[in-house]
Amino acid sequence: MLSTAEIPILGFVGFSGAGKTTLLLKVLPLLKARGIRVGMIKHAHHQFEIDHPEKDSYRLRKEGGVSQMLVASRKRWVLMTETGEFDEPCLDTLLPQLDQSILDLILVEGFKHEVFPKLEVHRPSLGRRLLCLEDENIIAVASDITLDEISHVPSLNMNEPEQITQFIIDELIGIRL
Image (cartoon, rainbow, N blue to C red; front, side, top):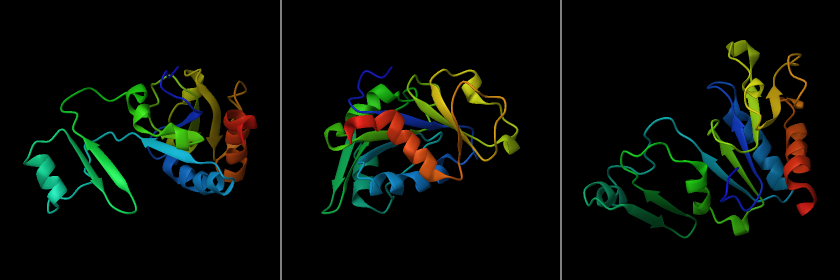
């Protein structure tokens, strides 16, 4: 289990194209409407840039070789940390980067090989195996059809985000509200 999680955490896992981001985009506003403050961690399988080559912050980071760059404005701030050629980051390393004191829940997209509670997003039409059959940390499966092959975890309808939101509240938030 994650030693740096101070609040409930739930991963949305599944194979590419299953609809993890689409489902999150439906569930997040419902959680917010219920007054739940959510932090998010998303795994990317490739290099990515949130900065642009024509910006001073990019030049300072790339040309200046700084290890960390914090860019701030009135509405937001972002901290970019260069990790070099290290292995994939683990959740226990990333969780302390979030200010958990101002959050009620952390949702994670990806990190399916880590040990923490997860909701599998599964579309049988993709022809991929069910992860819940081999991962005991999956606490529910959201799918676009009824799944007869699972009975050990709840099966949720991915087209009913209200149902999934209520499951998250019941299972992870509980009486904290």
